[in-house]
Image (cartoon, rainbow, N blue to C red):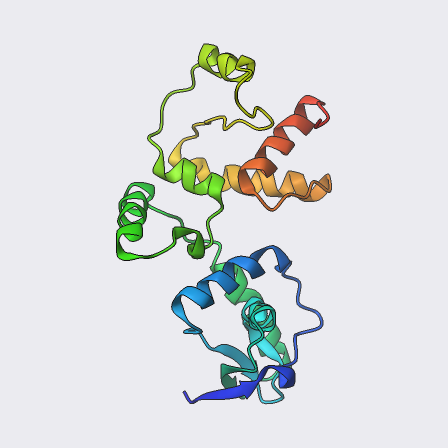
Length: 202
């Protein structure tokens, strides 16, 4: 496949793109700054984007004038189907968190900013800090300490590993149905739990 440098202004977003992706733009922009624009945008013959809408938004945010592009000769229905499949299949894979933690811990020594990898600060805390069983007394003590910011606390929850994806999907489905919006995944889960309990956030 031929990779071409194409002017950002000539690329056409898919107007029916069902993927909500604005919350990913900053993370992708940081990744491009750290590692370069190493994944071309995939377009059809008319330069309508098939895969790479977030990369285009990140390029605009960074003020890039040209980006690498691969063009495919593909029918409109196939283009739309591939775009959906490209987004959906990316959700299926999961992480080995022990291996991931080992990799992330070594990266700062090599000059790599782990925040450029797309994880939120809350997610990095959960991955890098040792997991401990939930201690209700210690949790209550955290809330009562007056010398710390108690606007949010991290509440560990354990689910069987085979139910991890189903649990995550259920949280996002509940949030969608009840119009709960929060880009931070840990805070989103907290808002869902509060909604289930009938508690309004402060």
